[in-house]
Image (tube, one colour):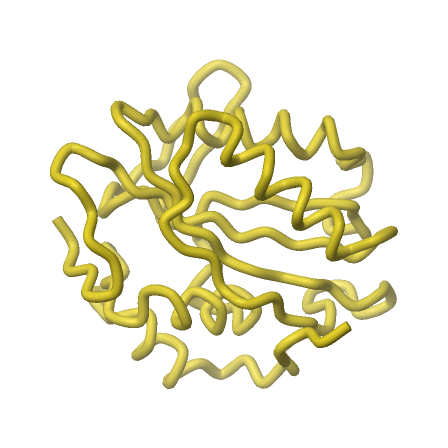
Length: 178
């Protein structure tokens, strides 16, 4: 079990780290609706980062994002089912996946699931854990470092804080103040 100095986790609980982002419509309301859907989906919210306003990374010609990271726990979680659940939340909240990397009402990525390393497919769900680009993204690492700075990346062996400190991505990530 990974060291988690910020939160006490009961033995037997599995912890998932989710990145939430929105850059269409009422972005803050979309994050709130997504976190509410996660909680009502029988997951216990352990921690939630601040909300950050960020510039788009891959396709800069779109509105700015609001991003956050949450940690959620539950008994007998399955990472494939959890990702499928997150994709269902996205669909309910109006996510259109017809254009990859386009503006979106909500995006929920499964970043890590305990210290599991997964690369597979179950049904219609493709899953790579840890998320293959999380260590390259300031908009992921900054909010994650806020809630679990000493959590170790299961492949890279570095803490989230170390990954953030050594990051080459210089994109702007600032606390959102409405």
